[in-house]
Length: 226
Ligand SMILES: [Zn+2]
Image (tube, rainbow, N blue to C red; front, side):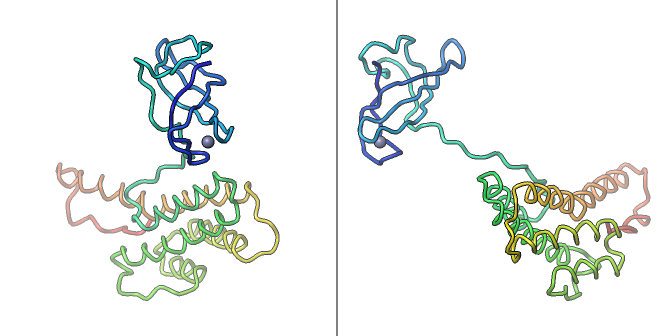
């Protein structure tokens, strides 16, 4: 049976022989090979271009190219726009990663933190708000944004639902389910879009219109809300 010599990432043993137990073909040249470590008996998947016959007792690498490291699988998370501040994006990435690893409770708590930090950053980035002190409590902060007409009522409502739901994940004794965390992720994306992405897109289009003479500069800046 074909084998490879690799450092096993399952048990940590270096330079160990791994036997091929199965494979998948990607095209005429490329394979994914399921290799089992002689030391620990656990499997890893390696990509490469071995010769097709795996039954012979031979080093699969001889004269061929096979990756040094096994395939690592990272969950794919929704990509957020660069218009959203980096710290908020980072919190969202952590929350979304937890969700995809089946950790719904930390996911829920982290989505809430994303909304919390995101609204604080919205305060500090917004011309009309930068000299104002945001409320400490998230829901009061959201309400204030609505009262000052910085945010439309429907967005305040959306954010309040998300804040309350994330609060549940943080404090409630009942289990916070994957479905709940998934719904909160959608709400969080929607809110960040309304807070940061749409205003930035509008600002870019407006600047372009001014530059091309379609719009007069003095009509700009009317609606820096959302
Ligand atoms: Zn091993």
